[in-house]
Length: 573
Image (cartoon, rainbow, N blue to C red):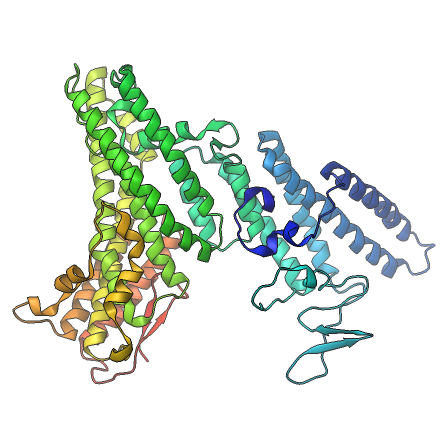
């Protein structure tokens, strides 16, 4: 599954490079059959060992049950991994049953984890931890056990920089299997995501949890086993067509539209959607990589979306002129363009926020990162969604007029399927959270609470341009140059430059607005609750600072990212 999904670039998973073959002569059905034979034999021994006539009934029975549980667990898990990529509904239902069986067996395995031969992990030396065995020297991070050499492939690996590798203990390994089973159960739910936008949100949310490469690979194979086929059967271009239609309902994609009767218009739309397949496919595949690799790929993906933006504008302009000449003229400007812009902005935001998660930014850089998010990206995103929302309303109203019946039932149904109100509210809250952080950081700089680099070895313009370099290829939104940033953020443009207390108070108001917006959301999920905690706590901190607390202290504040990966809680030391 890992080799087929190709959501890795690390040499650790490229076994063929260093000649480490995984027994290619044994097929999956044959391997499952051999495991089943061993399982049946152990099952007979379980029954025999429980007889009163056996020499040590309890101990022998427990040992055989422990071994039987592990072999059966391995067979069921292997069967799940070989069945999931088939994607048929009967197979997926069977996988749910097999995963439930694995969970039951895992309980028995955890209960008997102390039985059998235990690995050597104890050490006798002080600084460097080693275990001494005959003619072999092992690090304690690589427990040795009879019949298994954990470093057997060490000399086969390609030359790389030294890396710290630690093999999990038995208890940790069983905990990993438990988490893996839960992730696989979650992965199966992707088949219920019929719209592309919901599926993409599922991928992004799943990736945010830091899953292992196996579960990430299975998710990729379930949704996009072939680059142009969703679930292996649906044409990806058709799926994207439905996504654009549901997002903003362009007139050309409306039922009984006369625009597609024009061969040139149909060719333009089909060509545009075909060109969308590779960038959107790369976006889905990108979500399967680890978080550090995702950031690199997001930067390159923006170049593809810049090309799509240009094509979307040209298609919209052509269809708009064509629509105005038709019997039922409707505006078509910025329909496909808004759809592409929406995804472009999300990619830009993902790129910037990943820097916090990967700890790439220094504290003295926070102010222009949060400023860019506050002043531009979230504002543009809210504007794009609002435009789509109003366009949808207009199109629905016109459709109902032509039908001669506008029922409230249909309106309420469409509002449920397109919940832009909730999405807009969340993005407005995030915009205010970023505004609060930006103003707080400027206040900290005025008070000397942020440690700045030595002027001789620092150039803020170079750092700024490096952080936002991937945005240079985009025309919409236009990249903000460093000179513009300095002009727009200079405190000297005010007749009376604000003090740090004024900035803390302004940031406090931003956090209060974010809190008020988030509290209007019905049925908040964990993400909303985490953001609420950040907004409430930072509101209190900035309110205290605005009152003059620790005004003369130059001790830098701490930024705690434990509550949220991207938006920290400010702590005064």
